[in-house]
Image (tube, rainbow, N blue to C red; front, top):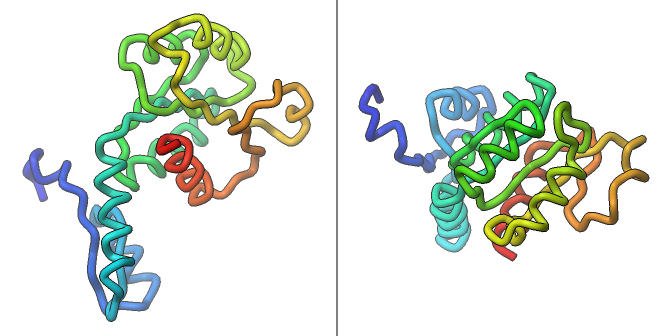
Length: 171
């Protein structure tokens, strides 16, 4: 819809359609998720709860690779999350203090301020120290990461990142 108000309404499609190309077209049109008919009420309610949960949550993605940043932004928005982005550590740190997100998704290697600097700053800020962080790192960087409970190795599957994000925010 062209209405700005309706563009913010999350849509879950109920469909008997099973062809992936048609489902993909529905996603391109703006649905958040879908449930195929016949469906169990419990399954549908889980989808609705996930969407309602997501639309109330703000995620800050700090990633210096533009393509990865766009992919993450699209992936989170596609599930209904509010998404803020930053292309370097200083920009990310500034946005974090201004907007206080519910989750930070943070690339390990960043220009201008690396992930370790951001994590240390967060730890020392009473307003930000409780925000969960998912750290994204290449396989060869894993040994550098302080044991971080929410580290995720690249490459990762976006769907798995969403599931982990929801679990981290809910905990």
